[in-house]
Image (tube, rainbow, N blue to C red; front, side):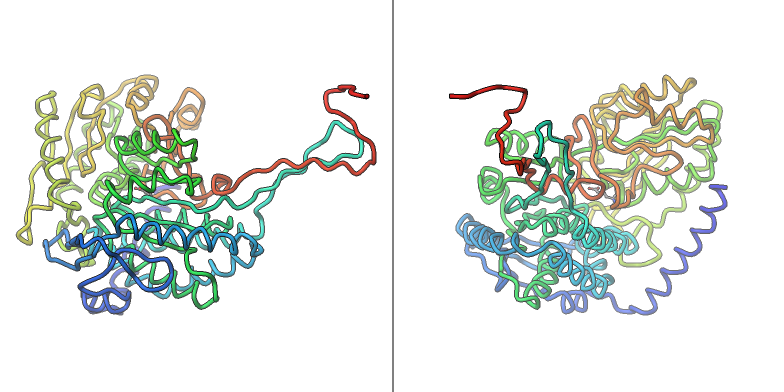
Length: 535
Ligand code: UN1
């Protein structure tokens, strides 16, 4: 059954792409820039009106595929940050008093504005970050989806009524807006991660201050321009949506230490998360940490191998292995190991590497030469630790700059140090198992705990994987890969992934403050726990 569904879904997706390409013949830089309000010289701070910045410190945004300079951005300094923060705090005071359904209406309009700009914003993601067009546009779709979700929440944010032990008393729970929410996002999802946080924060009555990755400033500027238009058209105070593009060592440090940010949502490496989570914890602030993953798929001998192949391929090669949910390990039953790898390698040979804006491309560049250096170091380490490269391993430069790599498969033991580490590149480690108990032990035997999957048509195997003795990850799937989660579920992971959850389910609660209310309508005082206290 599952096999049939996959086969049907694939051609539909493929058909959509050429149609889109025909409709948009010229996804040129000039057109993308014009439609998203970008230019060659920009400033890095905004809180609703004009862009500004005074650091005199310029950041270059480059096309990772070609090395071409896309634009220069004057970064925000601490004075710019202070100005932005002031606006964010002031706007919160008014926004929090607007009924949630009216906040939802503004977010609905923002979602519509994104729909109108989906092609262009998706193309900008491809241009500046390097993921292929369908994935860039898929990322914008995630933004639209979370807006729809937030609109729904705007009429359903609620707290329970609780049973009081005292007569004629009512107890209930309320959820109030929290304040200014800080968002620090990574380059690999340069627009969606901001939207997951912002749409929820806004519907909850918070304002948002965003520090995007310095590797993708143009994506942030474009998002801010779209949001500004919607907020301005609704006559809302400036500051509900704010951006500071600046150095981690200056504005980043000020931000994480800022008591005016009761919550900071951080997406990035475990190393950075440890430091940022530590600083926020020290000031007793709240953080959502979305850190490294080391996601594995167990492929049972009872699996539909066609489906397992499609998911492993997308999970490992998609986004050039630069998703935190990318599949980094395959734990394959010994009976199907050789056949499965043969098919996987055949797919790898067909990967079209090139310009991410060309709809025929399947894999674009890595974000920069630093990422390529990490890829190369990992390959050297893997070989030293006993790894056998089954496919790939080389650096490529189709457009002159060495930012492309071959998707790579390495056979290596789970315990190898390099397998225990997240390398943000398309390297897939493969290993064999005999018994499911061993496969689960291998699966869980890494420091990270984000996403996981088992391919099996055995109900018992699948249920075991989801049980308390199964996967220890925040996301655990059966017959679905590790990457490409929908926005409706809570997104995040355990162990060194940081424990944060964002996006769907009840994640909105993190963006609000909880208040327990007890109301006495009986005209008599009763102390709880039966305490008597009379003069
Ligand atoms: C990330 O890589 O930081 O599940 C987020 C996925 C996407 C989100 C990835 N929806 O792959």
